[in-house]
Image 1 (cartoon, rainbow, N blue to C red):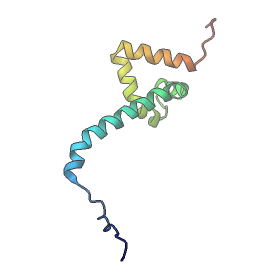
Image 2 (image 1 turned 90 degrees about the vertical axis):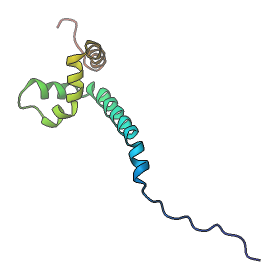
Image 3 (image 1 turned 180 degrees about the vertical axis):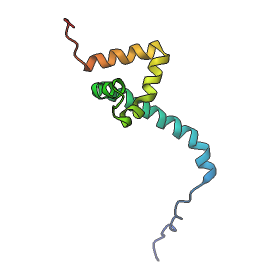
Length: 97
């Protein structure tokens, strides 16, 4: 008697309806990850971001990448205060300045 084997599984098929149902969730997760990455990078890259926004000839890619954070800081004092505190952890400011 031969041992029983399971029939082969059909290959995965793309389901447009399921994709469209989950798309808003994927976009929210991607947006949250993007904002988290911006917040984490703004501290170590402060001088690069400062240079990009302070001078007209700054790096356009840096300006475009950090634009959502800059806009959020312009419109919300709370976000601005939190970002200021976080950048302060990375940027040393002497007491005599």
